[in-house]
Image (cartoon, rainbow, N blue to C red; front, side):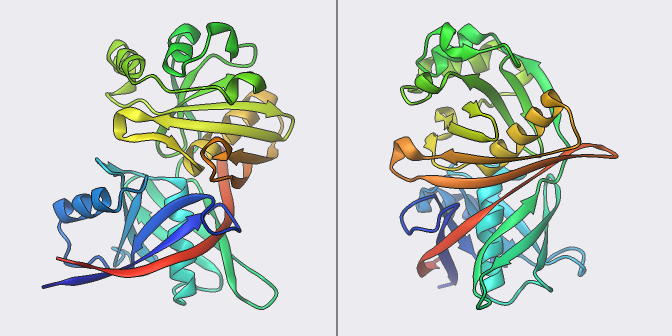
Length: 295
């Protein structure tokens, strides 16, 4: 029998049982792709990570990220949480880690308190902002269980965008955000009606008040009815808002997970660079469980 150690953490929170849950298998050597996928399904978190030796010895690790149903090229809270776990094991170099992922290299800065204890991390998204198809407000409203008037289109139409993994971003009114309820049948209708979604449809709805953002994320087709903290989507929103507002740099505070009873706090930045608009996302983490998987 083979044993594989794992740790779980709550990400984007300073309070245990808040934020977004993550399981980290700290040494995944010997696991097949199918076993990783099965373990992620068994953990039943929105994502589970598997740490492997890097291809380039200058990097910290190769990190693979699995949802309950498929592998992700990049994701926010899995990187923050994995960095937190590995830094607590002394795997960082002067407070920095570098993760090789499908979407590219993810650079991470570790956060510590005055005593030197690891408290969280900030990651740089691996790709600059890219935008794709726009979607009808009526279709997005139906998928989110809202009325078309609840979707705000004055700043941008619902749009597919990415800084490493794709989401549909839609601004909604502050009042509508709390009553949004995903409708699986309409999610499937939108996915099937728009080939530009490439068969996947994750919806990030947000309401903005200056530099403060409240958000929710629904991906029921992929098995995540609602996500308490979505770092990759949050970073994408930060980059998109900078592209719309103008300027060279912006910082935002985003709250998510309130409606789920798992409040999460994400710190975001976006900045213009030579290759486009780049974004970061960071926050605190709390350790929860340690254990072993038996295979």
